[in-house]
Image (cartoon, rainbow over all chains, first blue to last red; front, side, top):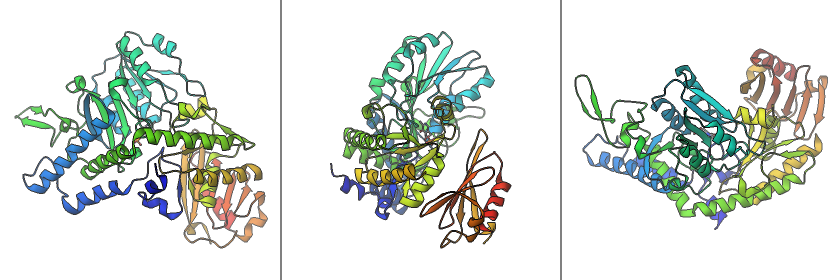
Length: 397
Length: 87
Ligand SMILES: Cc1ncc(COP(=O)(O)O)c(C=O)c1O
């Protein structure tokens, strides 16, 4: 695999810019930019409405993206496009008819986007319980088994931690939950862009993804769900495109993804997302994973040699994604990030990473952590450059 | 140069911690002279860390700043700090 060649596909990298914040959103390769541009240049029309040729072309391209995404995730179910992962999770939270005393189990590892939608359901009498994890992100599967009772309808859990990268045993969690009759929603925001996802093997009921973190345009997300939920899940938005017929006081919903994407969707974004999937497929998810493990191992090795640096999470790179949280002595994480940017043009994330419970309560990092997150376009040279900055900060302060 | 020559952004506000990111509308050539009157906790080539009574401030030569760890809702205080640094 020729990383230098891959890097040429990312225009932003031509400007001496080191991007270690792919955990927040990925850079977009030229084929994605081109697909969006082509749509706007050549066939920028609405979908599913016009009878004219360009509208047909847009409809086919947008629909084809759905098929590509479904194939990419190897799942037997439905894929609908959303504006981000947060919306995908909220669609499930709003879409299920909850009853008082229904129980939802989530964990301390979750991003706020996989907590707040469930907390809000408390007003309907839904009970939300949180499973603790250790500082490496391990949860106790026996405790999970015990916590799932007759009232438990959903286990909502992340595929990989956005703070420390820990990859969770989601297939096992799903099996345990299903055996006890609970549905499973996996927040795949940090899993989908970096791991080969076989939803048929994981067998979860819902899988939520940030399209923009897997090189799709911003404003794109994905919700996968099993076919059996097609009629059970109430669409968030009803209106144009969602119905096959309307009567004086009722309506009949269509029988495909359009049911869940009311109104004009992000057509350009959806088409770009399809191009992103093509791009990832062309490289191969196993190659991406291999490269990220190598970078993560290399970075952690370098960090370990620096006095005053503490790394969070598992030390085995193959048990985590390329997300590495660390602190340098007690220097506030935002200071580390601003120095990295100002002095070295390195973009990293700092703070609590929208995972307050994990960062503050489990890692005990009230001031947050500095977080570097890698993708296929990053290199060891970039890491070397960043490590020099870290060494300087650690030595000077 | 006073505070109107700077844009002040709240970095994040959570559980009582507030950070402010300050960007000069026009980059400075060097640290403002006024910093000599302030307490300098660390002095580096490209930046200083200033110790204020209630927080620390990282100040870069070009005028970019990070005001660290003020209580929530400290916008007025952040503006006053920028004024104080710029003199
Ligand atoms: C684990 C996790 N879940 C959810 C989200 C929210 O994703 P989005 O910004 O696409 O809504 C993120 C984003 O950082 C994340 O890391």
